[in-house]
Image (cartoon, rainbow, N blue to C red; front, side, top):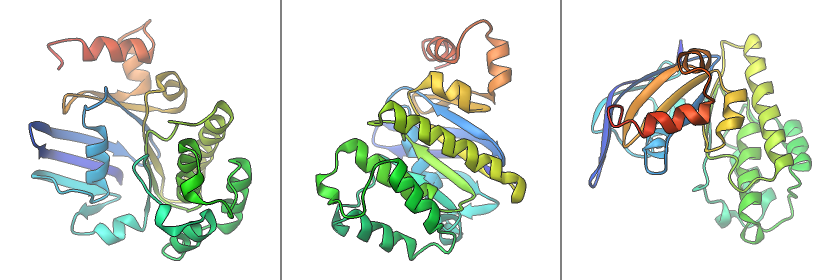
Length: 243
């Protein structure tokens, strides 16, 4: 089973057009989903979570169709985004308790450990948290679940070096657990390309709403050797024939 499958997906937002996208990510993969600002990465991830509806095409997440199976999909997918807002719940503890009630796969022991390691306290007021601390809270919420798919939209923005290392460790541990399940997957959108090159085993590059590259990390790096992922990225998005 694939973690996600997009077939002919299009989404129009004003003058911006996403797609048509054809992209498949297998279970067990860590996909680096990269592109310049405004390329359509967040729009694509939102579509996978049912936040917005595709104008054309088919979206399948963990073998289920979006939007038909939206509720079932959201019960298996954990999502992190800088746009998530937990302020209405007041404190960190209240927000966590509220979210926990929706997910039977919640691991409270892991949640307590992550709060300590990310230096976020239950008593803290969300409105008083720094931007980086709010990202940490979002990560704690996602990683405290035994989800089958992690969708991480710019999860490292605002994080210090220690927090980034903790996040990458948790992602590796998350994928390792696939041997005990039917397979897990991670889709991570980030501008930290040097980190993604070490972490991801698949890569998809989006530019101006179009998918201009999709391959395993090994295939892409070998094809463009001796360039790094960052150099490959710059080369592809500045290639007029690829844009």
